Image (cartoon, rainbow, N blue to C red; front, side, top):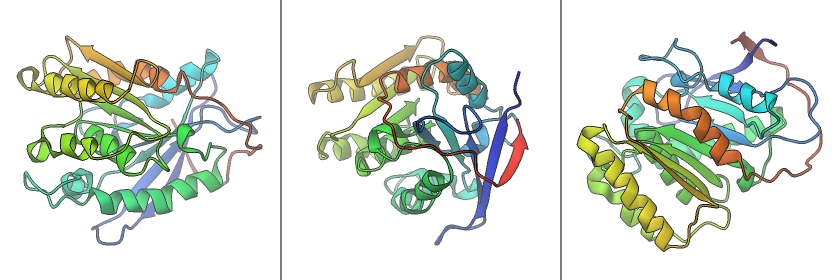
Length: 269
């Protein structure tokens, strides 16, 4: 089997935030490609690939993506964006509350103005919203949902695993209700019945019901309840391969020219 190569970008400093962080990029295949791949940006990049440097085990998403590619299915380029440790809650919070300053807009501004263009310039990825997704779990799932509705001109799809919809008195529901339905929108939402007494799953079901009332259907909204699911990296790692396949199953591929693998730091996965 071919070696997995993960490109290491950074370290980056974000204006207004402390410390440095890395961005890791995984390509489903190396070398020149006939057409660009969809791309998935992920919060909590430390958890995306390996067990190290994650605190509680990585998702090994690069293995799931390689499997999709080997089966001839749409396989996205993965971009894991590291969180800032002690600043994680603040940078992933769309609203102030629950001990957070609520600076997701600032963090998202850095992602869309710096990281998205950098990845688009260096790698053969799609540049249209329909081919550009963002994802995460827990607070990262909430952040991904918010980011999609906040910047649908850039991020046309979102992968939301066990999103923390309860955060800041569930203000995310009012926020989404006030936004127009994006012209390009695909959503994957899941949650486990064993998370916080079932409240995470109930909130997710409420979100899905609201979105369906606004015109979403199975064509662009997939809801996957997990009866055995807990709020854990193990549960998200188990569901991640299916989530990837579902989110990108309908992604239309467009010819946008060829590009090879860029020069840069590499890590064997």
